[in-house]
Length: 237
Image (cartoon, rainbow, N blue to C red):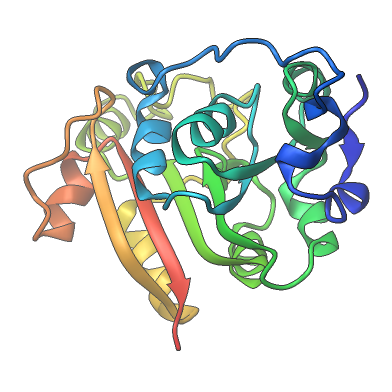
C-alpha cells in the first residue's frame, strides 16, 4: 500500500471512517504494542493525551504510538513519517500515515486541525526546529515534544574528559553520521518556549528506564540529571 501525500492526508475523514476500516475489508493486523512495551517517551506522551482526541504524530515510525492511542484512548490518530519503508509498514497495518517530513509538509494542514500534535525524539533532527514548533501549535491546540537532553551530566563529562563528541546510550551515533543536527538541553527548550510565547503546561525529565527525576522543582538539576524530556505546550492566550 502506498502512503498518501501530506496534501491528501489533510483532507482525510476520521481514521475510523477510512476505507481500510470498512466491514467488508480485512481487519487490520492485531495491536503490536502494549503500554509497557512502548518506548519510554511514547508511554509518557500517551498519558498526556486526552481520550477521543484528534492526534497527529510527526515522525511516527511504524505507528506504535498511534495504535496505542487508537486502542486505549479512542483517538483519531494520523501520522507523518519521512522513512518510506516505515510509512508503508504502518499503512499496511491499517494506520492513517503519510510519507512526508516535518520541515516541509506541516504547512499543508489547516489551522486547528488537531487537539495534539506530537513530535517524539525528532526535534533535534529537523532542519528548522523553531519553525516546526510554530507549525505544530498552528495546526494543533497542544504540542507534545520529547527529546534527548544534551545537558545530561554524562554528556558534559565525556566531552570534558575526552574532548570528543559524547557517545552515550542516548547519543549513540558518531558525529559524522548522526541525524541529530540540533541537539538541545532542557534549559534551552524552556528558553525557546518563553521566547516564542508558548505555555509549558507540563514537563517531565526522566532517565532511559522512564523513571522521573526527583528534581521537578529545579530545572537546573533536571537539566543535569534527566536523560530525556517530555513537554506539553500550548499557545499563550
